[in-house]
Image (cartoon, rainbow, N blue to C red):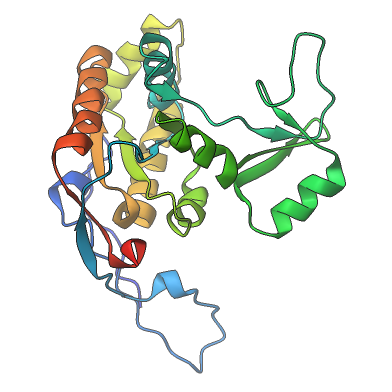
Length: 254
C-alpha cells in the first residue's frame, strides 16, 4: 500500500530538487483487489542515456507549476525579450477567426469534426473546451517551431506531461515551485492580489501534490522567490542545454 506522507511543513517550497528525479512512489499491487491501479502507480525504472541537443533542433521547454507560481509570466517575458530565439506553438481551435486573425498565425482554425478526429488520433499534447469551442496544442505545431530553429515554450498542465514525453519532441521539463507562503503573499500583493490565508495554503498544497505525483517527470526545478532571479536562472538552464549533455530516457534515442 502507498505509504502516507507525514511531517511536512506546508510553508516549505518543496524538496523535489534535493532528490533523485528517477525515484518513484512504491505501491504494492494485489491482483485480486478491486482497486484499479494504473501502470504509473507501480514502481518502475527507466533506462537513461546522455543526450546533447543538435544546434538545429532545440528541445521544447515545458514550464509546469501551480496557479500563481509565475510560469506564465516567465514564458511571456522570454517571448517578449528574445522573439527570434523563443516561440510559442500555434494552437488549434474550432471557433471562428476574428477580423484581425490569420489562419496559422494566431490559431489553426479547424472544424469540430477535424479537431475531434485529430484528438482521437493522439495528435494533441493537451486539449479542452471553453465557451463551446475546442482548443488544443498539437505535436505538429511544436514540431514546426523546432524546425524553424527556435525554442518552443510551453506552459502545460501536469496531465499533459506523459503525452508530451511519449512524443518524439524530447521536452525539457522545468517545475516552477512557489516560495514560502509569506513570500508568495508579498509577490502577489505587488500585482494587486490579496489572497486569503486558506487560498495561499491551497496553492502551496497543489504545488506539493504536483511534485509528489509528477516529480519523476521533471528535469529540474526553480523556486520562484524573486522574479528576476528566477528569470535569469531559467535562461541559464536553457543555455546549458547547448553546452552540456542531459540525461533522457534511452527510448528517445532509438
